[in-house]
Length: 114
Length: 118
Image 1: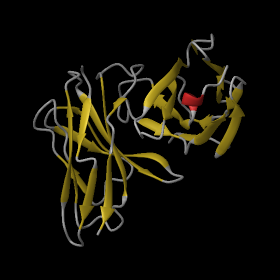
Image 2: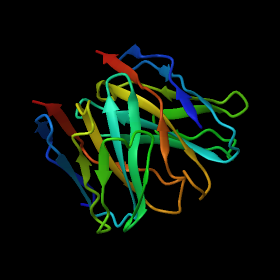
Image 3: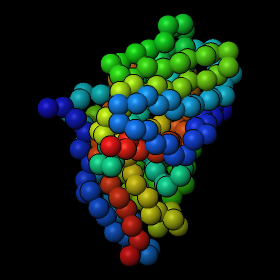
């Protein structure tokens, strides 16, 4: 079955450490997205990519970085500059050029500070 | 910038009853799309229903329907014959309907936690 796989499901970060969250999709979607979810805040867009080797900042990109070397993969790195990384992170993908098409989501990664 | 407001942080409904979740949005765009997503305790986001702003007819998906009032910028979700499996967070979301900068991005409300009581 096609879908989006996020790993790991739980991740712990030490002070000053960078960590990378994985997102892989086999839906043949061009567009991919990273969201952060905090209690009572809904989902906020961190980064998005419409095509390989191209990506744009979302609303809360500071302290995060991404790469898009392959169509299937859009990893998110939470850097040490992100002072409050504890949150639930969701990856999504969609068909590019079709804004009426929904975004499909992965199961998420919960990141916590040690 | 677009904003999406869900004014009901929590709601509850008896099993088999009907419940309506509210959503209002603010935009200067004329072409856009609206979505309702469901997030059960498993945390996966699941699309419930979507509405194109240019369509006057309200979208319906089985027990789920919307009341789209474009002039009032209101997009409420009605769940009929509520089931225990409907217990979840429900998010209203907005997307611009053109291919310019910022397109394809979803703007979410803060969510409504719905509990279906047996």
